Length: 454
Figure 1 (cartoon, rainbow, N blue to C red):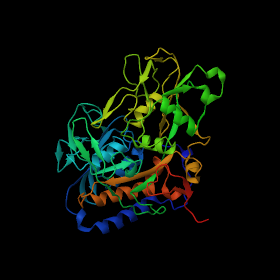
Figure 2: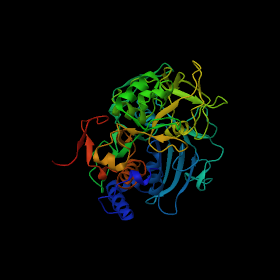
Figure 3: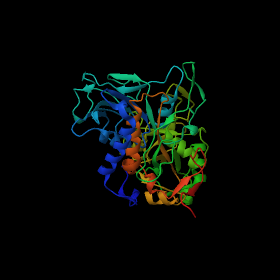
Figure 4: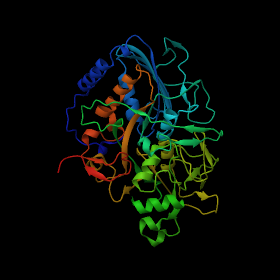
């Protein structure tokens, strides 16, 4: 969740409950009989960077007193996956989430071939599709993070109905008309996704299912000697894998200290925005390093000591082969763990070099000893984003699969409107608070311009 430093005073009324009631009422009237007397089951995946806003909005869609829910992970808003069951405006509804990353969300939702199904937590045992074993706000028992390989637990392997994405589908490897070769030997084709319809009480919705603006910050481990990173430095660092710290600090004493690049894998919208906003090039290969603890396990939690570091091994991400160095973390939470750990004792396992600093990009403060960097001398705050000074941000979207049932789309439109009007500030900036936008039909990485007359 963003700190108060990331928020700007609203230009609009603050009675959220009345706004939500008005927006939902309008959407329900539009939906008509589609919502009546049926059980609705919805599968959602996508962005880990925006999940705090998404999860909070999902939670609050349900009628008061009707909700039962559970999740995997240490907290509801930091969940890997969740199950929400109850009634929404009197209709029995089950919403299942698995947060796999924006690119993965678009991939699974837009696939028109044999499908790219996703593991969602099962709600067995059930009565009328309501999980009887769930308690209010508890972790799901005996179940792993479904995004890991061979997770333990009972899962529904389903094609998602909808995906949150940090970027436009046009920026994705899974854009409309794309053909992608899977490691299975099959070629999968992808179609255009539909955009959730936003009823905008706070500002004008810009279309394409945009529900907010999501920003990212570069962070380093606490053992460094610099506080800023520029566009050119970011391009050079991620192309080479590491650079001398003197490039960043300006001190000759740092010429023999390495700064290593790490980041997200190819299922991530955060990575798309990194490539777009640093002008690195969307879809370009990077040179990521991965950090391990003394037992040889990949570090995914803060306050660990990094023992060794090496170029990221070849990988398979969502059935697509990824070359050495080009993969990365599958969630911003796990990447945050590395950035909040201690790096000054680590050993590069390829050449024996000792020590260094690790740099990566995430949307929320990692904690631990991580240090936030300014980007081109500007801090990541909501005020700076809204004014057009900070540029490492993109639009958050809610897309859904074409042909999605008319009993599901009204709920998705309600969800999108709820995030747009109320909850976007939990993971980014509300569109109604922005005084700038980005131009072009595919706005990722495009120049920032005012959205007012001048």
